[in-house]
Length: 550
Picture: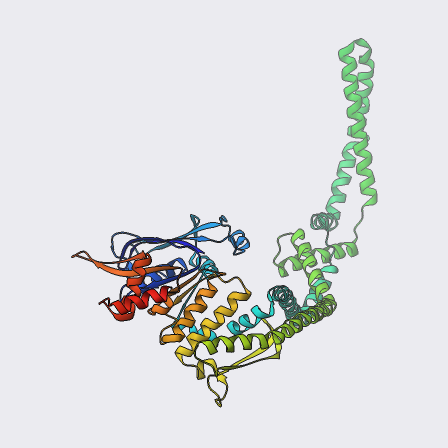
């Protein structure tokens, strides 16, 4: 419910602050007084794009602020989803700066116009004559049928399952697309994988093979050097082993002459043992080493294979080559198992489709059962609004596709007169008829679901007399369960309001201001009398005005 509206520096409005309560509020004023300006300011709160030309004072910013009671609107999920502070008394503020930039706030948190618009749609429904074309929208028509069918929860379950179905369908399409690409690349990937599987890939293998290759490729040089080393150590006359043996004997004799000689003897003994061990190692290596051309060719072949694979796959080391092999293994494995995955996803999709169909069928049945009641309520109400021969032809038929609103096609046809063929509303109903049909539908909806604040902008244009009385009565009745505003030129409608506001212009000699005030009892009488008979307030007009209020 809208509880307060403040507008500053907008069009002809210098400053306006007005409070509202529940029930039926009527707003009147002469043509050009600024009722459209009031709606324009309110539309900024609902997310409409700002226009710099709307600023009254081009050097000051425009501020529009509205306070709403939202405790009954089930909006906590919306606030949580958009990371906003939820307050039962929520304040929406819109600012237009002289630079042309616009800012929007919900409870002092900055928001985008998209979020503002989403919230605005749930708070106020502004209906003007040109918006009656919404009646011709199939989604809106289904919404009306669903309200009477009490389809809110079934449609929520359907929407959840539809999301699962579409997600599964997308996954299946991706798998099939992957299969098509994988089939084209499978043979090539398998060939590359087999090449890598034939190579001795393991960490450190390249260094190991390179060392082995150097050893085998230089075996003659190695043997020659081993022989020289062995000769140096074991020559009978000047060999190092012989000389160390003689040195060891000397140190043994000296060791008995004190600790320094004893320590020296120990060190010489260690040197002798180490050199003797080296001599044995040289001999052993020389005896066990020989030329092996076949092994050399094998090692060289493995090295060349690894070098070629590194070049082919643009890798810097064996670890990167092993990663390529792992990736190819995954791709080949995925290609080989894709059929199983597709079959599983197809089964999942079929199961989703069955569940979705069950929900859609239930929704369709509920819609069909609600249509007779909707048809009767619409036709009965329109009869009181001067359209006694209006009839509707509303039919539900199954659709081939799963839609956002179910699996139904809706036919919503209208005939205003006896003997007249049924046709689409936009083709067979006049503007005045569409306005009355829209009012009727809004009245029906108000009975079955929690509508936001409704604001009718001259929906009663083109009607008069008893019909205007009935339209006022309908809006008054709707206000029993919701807040209703009506901007009207008809005294019959204005008199039905629980609260009556007047929009008027005031000229201070320099500039013109649009203002708005709440009328007291006698002020209402005068306003209604003026609407009935003009500026000159006659006794008959005043009496008629009092009669309307009573």
